Structure formats: C-alpha cells, structure tokens
Image (cartoon, rainbow, N blue to C red; front, side, top):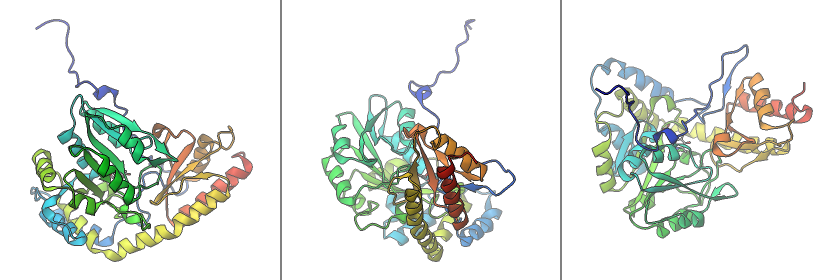
Length: 371
Ligand SMILES: *Cc1c(COP(=O)(O)O)cnc(C)c1O
C-alpha cells in the first residue's frame, strides 16, 4: 500500500455536470403556499389512481411484475400501440438516461436546443459524450440549426416537444423534416411530456413517426397531466430493436407495483383527464392575456406553464418579482440555468393561485415592489 491515498475518481466528464435544480417547494409560512415551480397538475391525480395505489399497499413485500405487462397493455389499448414496443420507466427521466446509456459513449455527440430540457446535457455528459447545442429561433427549436449540428459523431437528437421551459412546440411537419434530414443511425428522441395539453392541429406527439421508422422514439410521462409526479412513472414507444436494447439495460424491477396500479387507474379515468385539459384551456389563455396586459414578456406556450420575461431595470426585474411573489406564497421557477436570467417559469395553477399571481404581479408592476 502506498502512502499517497488515491481517491475514487469518476469517469471524465462527470464532475463537469451542473446538477439538476428541482423546482422549489416553498417553506411553510403563515399563509398558503402555491407551488407553481414544477409543472405539476393543479387538479392533482385521479382519486381512482390514489385508491389503486392504496389497494396495492399490502403487496409491497413482493417484487413487482418486472415488465409492467398490465400497464403496457393499458397504454397500448389507450393509444392503439403494440405493448411489445413500449418500455416503462421510473419517470421518463429514467428512459432518457437509458437511451443515453444505450447509444452514447466517449467521443459521441448528442444534440439538444438552446433552451432545451436540462436533463439532456446531464445525461449526455454522464455517458462521457459531448452535448452540442443547436440555436433556437424565437425560443423555438430550429430544424435547420439542428441539422447543421449533425456530424458523423452524432448519435442522438433530443427534442422536447413542447419544450420546457419555453412552452413552444415544433409542428409535426417540421419534426418529419428533421427526421428526414437525419442519418438513419441517429436516434431522434421526441420527449412529449406535455403532449396531452397541446391544442394545435399541426402538433403530433410522434406516434406515427415512431411506427414508420427505425430510429425515432417518443417518451411520455404520468408526472404532468396525470398528476403522478411522485410515483415516477413514464414510458417510451420505440421500434422493436430499441425496445429490446432498453429491456436489456433497465433495472429488472424499475417500476413499483403501486405505481403500476395507479398508472392503470389514471389511464382509465378519462373524466379526470378531460377536466385537467379543460382547466388548462381556460387558464392558459387567461394568464397569457393578463400578464401580457401588465407589460410582461410572455412566450406563447402550448403546455401547462408559461415563461415570463421581466424588465431588466433593477426595479421590476426577475429577482424582485420572485421575492414579491414568494412573500405571497407563490413559488415560481427561476430559469437562469437555462440561459434565461430575466425570466420566471410558472405552472398554470388553481383558479385561486392564478388570480393571486395576476394581482401580485399587477401591484408589483405598478409600484415596483415598493409597497
Ligand atoms: C417534466 C418533464 C419530463 C418528465 O419527467 P419525469 O421523469 O417523467 O417526471 C420529461 N421531459 C420534460 C421536457 C419535462 O418537462
């Protein structure tokens, strides 16, 4: 044994990763707290999902069904997909990680866009691969810019559609053009975490494209509109070969039984889903109109959240706004680590939270926070 002790060293690239910063929950203070920082559903989960979860509590001494067969069948039935081409994960984050694990190593490159979801650079660097950032146009993914970034080292393109934190989306024609321009060995990952919220004729989550190609996958989650973020439940629809690859490397029991049961119950409760869609359809445009009316910059969003830009005048700026909102129990998300230092992202909340938010920001813009 030598005297100069060697510490365990991670692989190159790991220590260069900026850890993911989750949305704050807020400290229990005097008044109510409105958590608008993580794009969770203001309606919460379906009561049927909670009941299914509880009914499964007695089973936690046994290993779950490692292939989540019943859940894959329920998803397949709901979307008309072959369950054999569905792989479930502990949140779609796990599936993004598994895709990176399968296709990226040192020397490889993976592309995402300027304000793309920050899980992508983390998972790319965790594999020792190189993240390549394609510029956006008006905070929207640019297919031409992404294609310009492709080299013979490119292995994955990550596209969040709609994107978080911008809320913008890429029309399906553009997604098809992106796919057509990619070499056939590059995996196109369509991260459709907010697909259920989108009310646009020119949007598709990508099911057809996955079905008709060998190199496209679509990830989905129960964390957002289904209100099951705490369960960690996501799935990917992919070509048979890629499903075979992911099933080789995933944890053999990567989902819990109560989560599987709750996911199945959530899928079956169409009324709850419709309520969540209707709520967003009402309050997203309302908030866009009110906040724009206050003179704030609002990026047009098709999701359940809004990116709001504050004037950089030292009075009505993002940091002052955030403080003022917090004083009223409104917890938003700072997005400086997304290269958006003057913006806050807010989740569409309950009616009460939305009205309070507009009142607080209305006063703030009038009085500059000096009240
Ligand atoms: C929230 C979110 C996810 C989902 O994460 P889970 O791990 O399924 O909770 C994936 N992609 C984007 C862009 C998101 O905003």
